[in-house]
Every structure is written in structure tokens, then in C-alpha cells.
Image 1 (cartoon, rainbow, N blue to C red):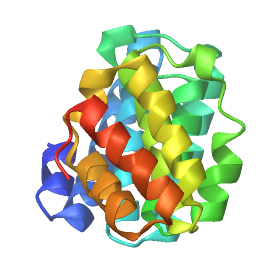
Image 2: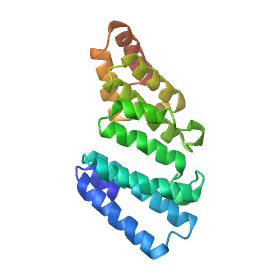
Image 3: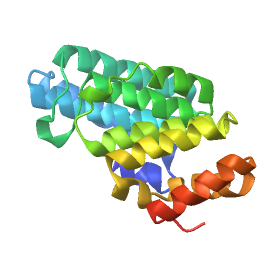
Length: 196
């Protein structure tokens, strides 16, 4: 529900729901099991993303701090209840929250700290590189943005090809970047199956 609300333009409501549900889960379970901690952690990460979408920097940071405490409690990355929750996933969300809040420099700095080998799924590794590409593009470093896109497509081409944000980013590189990057971005788009 939190994810759906945030994606459909109701980010503040999504953040409130995440907070309420996380509190209820904590009260009901005492977070006494790995499953409960993982679900709680995944929920507060959704809350962080929703708060960032609504421009609530403090709320997003509060959710991220809760997620960090839950991840520290687990002590490892895992996939309890299919959450993929753990310390590396929290780090990945810190990058995304910084990007969503418009702080490209912070997103890049945080991305450098993420342990790629601990991200359990190709989708998560691709998400990291796509956030990095968007941050570099916001920062005006088109060549680095394109490099991050190439890294993402090497991991999972289908993940790159099917994301609207990637299409917008590649279109921007193909139309607004310098001549050298524009040529390489057009070649990337063609190879990845992205229309420009």
C-alpha cells in the first residue's frame, strides 16, 4: 500500500501509513524474529522513499535511521520474507533518498560506500547504477552518467530497457550532452533497445 500510494502521487499519505504500520508491527511483535525485523526494515525504507518524494528531508532521515537500526539488529543482508533487507539495502536507499531530494553530490558520495557484492539481486545493483547515472546527469557530468548506464546494462539489460526514468535520461543525453557523449549515448540507446 505504501509503495502504491507513493507512486500514485500520495507520498505524504504513504509516509504516514508506513509510520503507522511500522509502529503497529513493532508493538505486535517486539521485532523478536528475523522475519519481523526484515519486514519492519523494508517498510520503513518505503516510508523513507515516500517522505523523500514529498520533500520531507527530516522525515526521510528519520525513516532511514530506523532502517539502519533494524539492519544493525539483523547484522547481515538477507531475503527474509522476500524483502532483500539488510545493511546494503539501507545504503542503497540512502543514495535514492539523496537523489530524490535533489542532492546529487551526496547521492554520489553515498553510492561510493555501497558494497555492490552485498546487494542480493541484479535489480538492486542496477537500481544503484541508475541512481548514480541520474545523479551524475543532475550534476552535469554526462560522461560519468553514461558510464553508470553502461555498468547497469552489463548487469541486467532488461531492467535498464524497461524503466521510463532511463528513457528520459538517455533522451536527455542524446539531445543535450556534448557531441562526443551524444554520439555514444545514441549508440547506447540503439544497443539497449531504447528509442530516442
